[in-house]
Image (cartoon, rainbow, N blue to C red; front, side):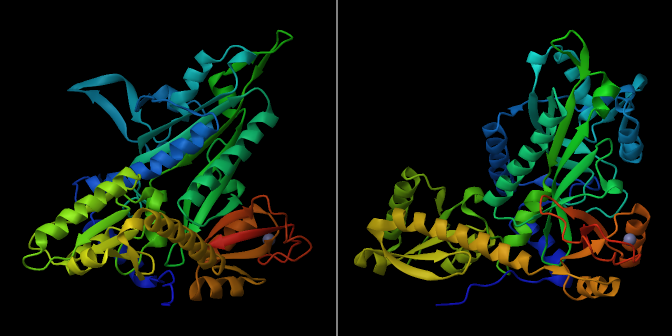
Length: 482
Ligand SMILES: [Zn+2]
């Protein structure tokens, strides 16, 4: 049996690989002449749709309802919560004119939608019975990124921003919602077979206006961490800024408690990056636009029969619910067709030739290991089904293992530096918790403190801080990150 290929370690060439794959499939075209924007191609859009479908299902399963708010936010609304605006003011695109006339009120292109949504919460919420509210939208947002942009990862138009916003009567309920948000996201990433760690971000790196933020990070093949989702407890900060209150049973008023959480197309960048290999995309079956690609192996004189049989097989598979195509392009060799569907990450390929027709067989090739098996053509549906399940399980296990090997422990700053340089990934170390010490550490290591492990206890307790020799009361995670 051939050995399963491990995730490739790209180091220097990862970024080149990523650009090449998204251009060659193609998934996303970066040639649009506005910096930091890109175009989802038909095939890329199908992958994106598969991912947003999973996001919608998981949120709706937990009682979230989809909404759609305007793109434009008046400046006085954006400016209401002071922490929030301080952090975004350098990143906001402004609409200042209608035609040639200056507008009375400047309008921001939403950088995120708290300040668009919460004034409406103020109108919608009056009584206890109006709570909780749990909504989400999947929209584009705009941020004037000044650092070098990167397709899907650092962009000026985030084209796929899922933001959920909730309001609750009590602090306990809102914090319960934060935990539910974390569980929903875990489930989304598990379905995509993207491995992750969850960390409570340090105070200086939390969402502006939040009391605390929990973030999901994965590690890409070059060893750098990528934030792929965040969940925030907002407390009553925005409720006070936007005057969102409900009447209690004693007739008094109470500000609501809030949570919000976001995911962007970075999750699609992660999906492509963690599973892909030298041949191109490798996609879990749930989001593969084509799950089974059927390739006729034609010889002169036998084309018609073979192609006809391939279409019959396709119809049978489609009836069983598979997304499938016959690649019957003429003048293209079977070899180039294999190449096409490997590049596009179709989990299963079926090869059918005249000899198979006679023997009543077909050749199945799985994309993750490129392993071939010969099966009876009458049992293709069951075999394909089994193969998809086996590929998904293999991808999940392989990535989990890969990521597990990239989480290291260290007890000195030098150890951390060495690990980050030689192996990359995430390093855990004991830390004192002081902001000054943390920021110094980030500068020393040219790395980011991802935060304290979420919900995992505090293994750093009783040790010495790796940086300042003070008493450590927690473990932190450190990584070079995007
Ligand atoms: Zn310290």
